[in-house]
Image (cartoon, rainbow, N blue to C red; front, side):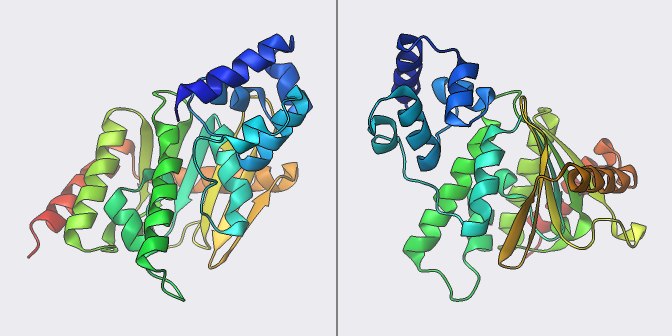
Length: 264
């Protein structure tokens, strides 16, 4: 987003004599999220912007002049989307397809174009733009740290066709080679593993407890119970211990991308 929005927020905060932490406490947000907004790396949700307006006594300026429209996502995912933008570490497990923040444009379109009822071309365009906007969390070279644990089915399912899959797998390899994302594959040869029941996202923050998000067909849930989150973290790490090492995972992705690229 244009940094003028973040600059204006910082100026209003400083004029009010508030630190980022004080404003975060007043607006029921995290200090790191305030910092990202001021630096131009994040856009607040409309509700976050309303709370900032109330905390700073700025009327409806921040909520009225958001740099972009509120994201087009399923209602059940909205809370997780906002948390995703604030996280300092994101750990993903994908059972069937590449996690949203790691998807290429063509792959995202292939995923989002199916469903019932089928989305119109205009709606699909809007969904793709939103998914690519989510991926901008990777624009910062260091935050958030992202780990992705992928079932081998993610590599083998030809979403969008061979050309789209080859491009998507090369994108993943490049992210890993630049150390922006750490990738591990759970191979078919492993048989059953602890995460086979669905997808899982673990989110860690600078100044609030971790949460977990699980999703199935047309439903998703954010878990913030410490006991539940600890159990899901343990399950994730149990599966990670059975995954292929990084170098072997990347070698499998390169080989699979080559197979797709040479397919008629």
